[in-house]
Length: 226
Image 1 (cartoon, helix red, strand yellow):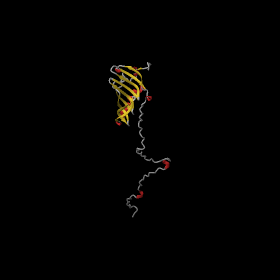
Image 2 (tube, one colour):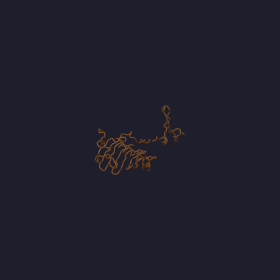
Image 3 (cartoon, one colour):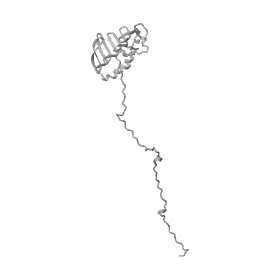
Image 4 (tube, one colour):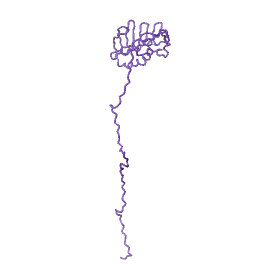
């Protein structure tokens, strides 16, 4: 074969060694130095369900013991005390009471009083009879606290009571109307008035008893100024 003869070239197949290698991406785990010395993995914290034992107890409002003595309250405060404190308390306890009768020593005599009773004691409006009189009064634990209304024929007398007559009142007769003020069982002031000036109506409803100028509708028995 002469030098001039051409030698056919063989097509070379790519060798596996000649192929470009596929690059593998390796993720380098960070070292503690790279994370920081104080690195700590976050932990999922689940909030515990509130336990009934752990709940703070609800504090119930304290109910103040009602006053039952003239020494506990000034006579001029009896109107609002009866209206705003005593009667709402009686109303709240209605369902706890049962009608009954108890013997009490009132007005110097032993009388049978019938009315709502709670824990064996009168708690609300009780009624009883006194020679010639029919009387209804509000009671707290067998003590007259609030309004008392006495009736005899044409006479009607309303008193504010705190065991004794203590506060304002009004008396009605066939001929006149008289406001009065008592302190610890003793009348200290009075005045004849017109019907629209009365402290209480003949049925025991407040008229002028809670007026800021209630002193204008009564005069002191000692003749002194208020």
